[in-house]
Length: 110
Length: 120
Image (cartoon, rainbow over all chains, first blue to last red):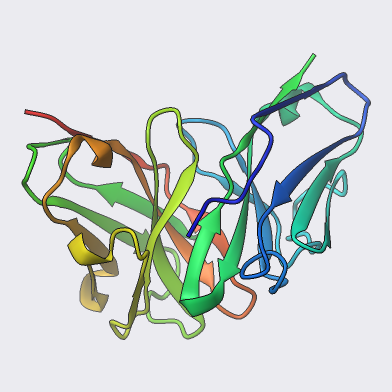
């Protein structure tokens, strides 16, 4: 199973909105709504931001939102803050009870 | 509060078996509807799913690791474990354990991860 495709890096200024993409295929992102997003600061536990494409767990800021179109899922962060600087990973359930992660996007807040 | 803590040797010799344990606290390990999983991150790379296990022992493994992987559970100790045989330098990574909510399929609680180096 190939990893989902994410841009290696993205940057933005405080207050801006940025969108991170996650491209898969018809056997994962395109076929299931079990797409989730995670914020990861190296050395720490990854944090769940979005599940089932666009649902937010209790406690996660409204500034994080998710969507999907075809084989591509997206995470939008609005009102960018310095504390948002981290690595972001998407993940998708696939056929045959497998899981696949994206390669990760490093977000830099300028 | 749900907590997961990985433990195991930080150094493994090539061709030996890499063994790790995850201890779960703050929640019933045998709760229905949750799988327990391992994920790793090799140096400079993204996250890689390794496999799932249910408290009953049912497993799902990544196809790329299936031939070398064994996962097991010990409900009496609230623990689940990973064994990866014939380790190579390519298995050098930070290994994370996590809980998966099976109804909506997401990883809701993670451990901090433990680094493992495969080297002679």
